[in-house]
Length: 228
Image (cartoon, rainbow, N blue to C red):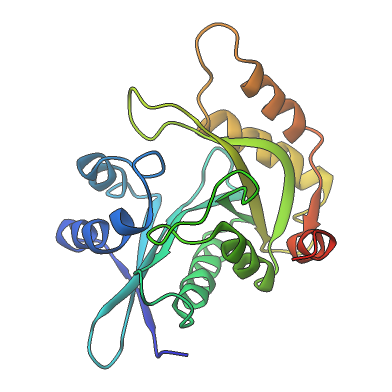
């Protein structure tokens, strides 16, 4: 494992550098807003940007963005987590996830949500990684799979939703995955985070209906059952 130091960053220059060097190299335009929109969004108080560096050389290794108090005080969102191409598998992702979990817990969240491509629908790529490996990473870190027909909302005007996504959750406090806590918090988050289309929107209706009855299952169990 490569030594790694994770620290918060706030300056516009640092956030722009991370966008250019890490995020734009790891996510397609359908999963990442335009640069100026990203910089404006991450300047808000409820957004925290975490930078992973080599403690000896200062080299940038990766970053994570955590959105706090999203629709409900119990919910935080791991908006992005990425390690620079060529440096994946070195322990940097785990260090960033641990830091994101600590940040969300310290802010009072009970759940840290994460969005991942369904590997049965989204192929692996050299630039954006392998969805199966990404699921394995989150399984090793004890995240749960939420039983939802999830889609990624548009990142910018004129874009389409990204279908066939999975939603995961890190349970930050005992009982946070109980129906009494999980379901109302998730519904509140989705109402705030996923905009409804004008007119009929059966996909949005189905998502909220599923959230009202959602269950959480350890992701490791799901992958084992799938032979992964």
